[in-house]
Length: 128
Image 1: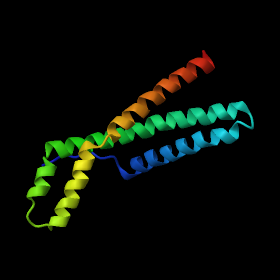
Image 2: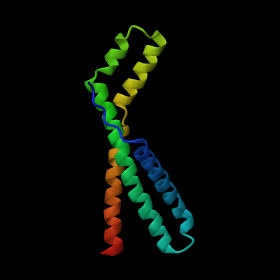
Image 3: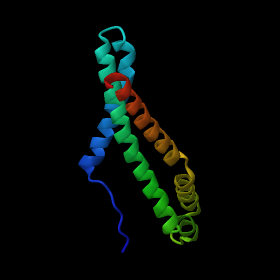
Image 4: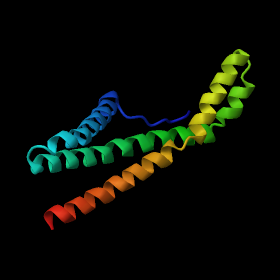
């Protein structure tokens, strides 16, 4: 039996809202620049830390998709499936092949790493 690890719905929602909060915090920086500089820093830290959590979670999901597609040979399985229409086979093959070859995993890794680097630099410049 295949053992697929997934997060609970509350955890997935938490990551979703962390991502939203991070995006709003980064966008608020442009407005906060007209007020106290401390609020710019707060928004920047909230956004950066939020993106670290959010993109780490996205990376894990895409990595798991890729692993399952490869290990379970899903591309060839869909092409050989007998009880679905040709259009359904083409659609499923396209979705699976796209999930397998997407650069999203690399994108999430880069954003995650750059967010950590930015956070470290920010802490050094602000507090040390």
